[in-house]
Amino acid sequence: PRVIRKTGDNGWVIAVGYRDGFSPNYKVWAYPIIFCCSFIFSFMVMLVLVSKRQHEFLLNKLLPPRVIRKLRKGKTVVEKYNMVTIFFSDIVGYTKMSSEMTPREVMKMLNSLYSIFDKLADKYNIFKVETIGDAYIALGGAPNKCSGPEAAERVTLFALEALQAVKDFETEDGAKIYIRAGLASGPIVAGVVGSSLPKYTMFGDTVNFASRMESTSIKMRLQVSPVTHRLLLDAPNYKFMCEQRREGGEIGVEVKGKGRQITYWVDSASRMTETRQTSARIREEELDREDDSQDCWENENV
Image (tube, rainbow, N blue to C red; front, side, top):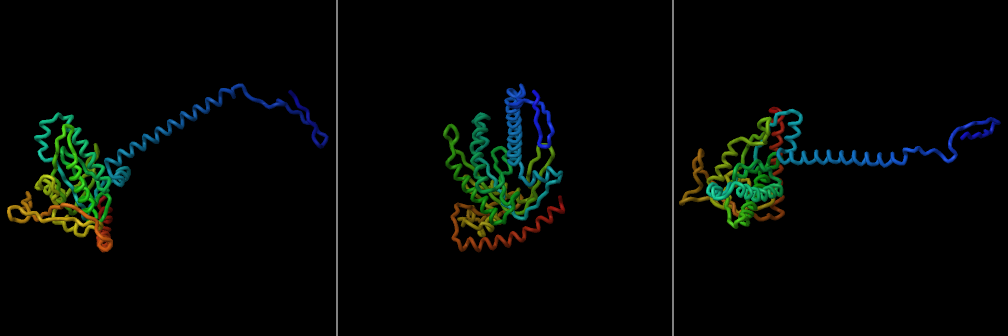
């Protein structure tokens, strides 16, 4: 319909429209469709974001975040650490035990046990390197750097609690298991090897020595190298009860490729007083300043 309206300056304006406004016929069904499409689009975006988050979570479980960033930039990952502490353990009598169990039972047992170890590794902020058969390998002081005494403290606390967890652990048929454990401290070089199924691994004599500390240990005892023992004396928060290993009246133990080595058993740990914690932190700060030179070496070799 037409609407004729007079303006204030004696003019006339003719307009065409509806007196009560215009509402298109498609309005009734368009709004529900727009709402449904918006909801579906938002839901799909949410699924993509959740999937990406899950992917990143799994990736961070396999490789350290800093290493992932370097790989995304196409860099070669080679990192040097002056002082780390490495944990090795294996199950006593594993070969005989696995021969008496089905592969499914063995896998279920290892998964149950090492899931407990994984939680302890997260608790003490150490890095799980890998499991090889019945062997469990963890690392303190890398890839997240900290002072040598702090790394030794974390890994030793982890090892002691892992031994306690094994004491409380039983297989499905109620059988008990036992482990050997060993620690060694020293310098290593760590990095990612290969482009297919890349793995963050470590190299150096310290790795071999840690393996020897485990293989020459005894059932349900924690054996540590002389360097690890020295670092534990400077531990920032805990005092460790250690005893020198003796065999047949002789000090130490024969280690393949190294001869007789003076080693120590670690039996327990207790929190220190505030005064000693303060002095230990001062020593840590001095060690941290020495470790700052690592970054220069890494930049030159990446």
